[in-house]
Image (cartoon, rainbow, N blue to C red; front, side, top):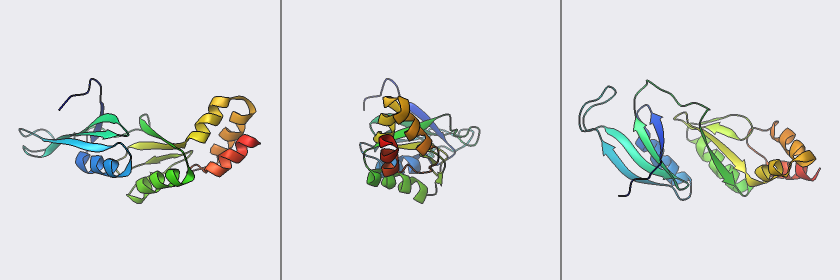
Length: 159
């Protein structure tokens, strides 16, 4: 096993393995690589409990740490998943929300473990990069949305 030079470490109360398996089943180029058990008791667990999980989300190396209740997820960190179609946007959004997550605004949602996700169609990102009136129209349309509506963003882009 090659250890990545840089990984994202995500703190979970106790369900890092379940979260990693959900991400691996939901997103392309995602998989569980290894599950590591605690060699001894620790503040939030016992010897033999799952301590860390090595996994990838869309090719990004991650470590899930079952650290207990000392820290919690925050919107200050999120995964942003670029989508190409409404169908793809719906699939990821519905997977997260349908698995105990919750919807937020402007394409943001939170999974049942508290991790934030931005399900962002590329058309929105492209509109913002275009700048000017096109970006303003797309931005104003997005501000009214929960899950991003690709057709509405495309219409806003056209004016």
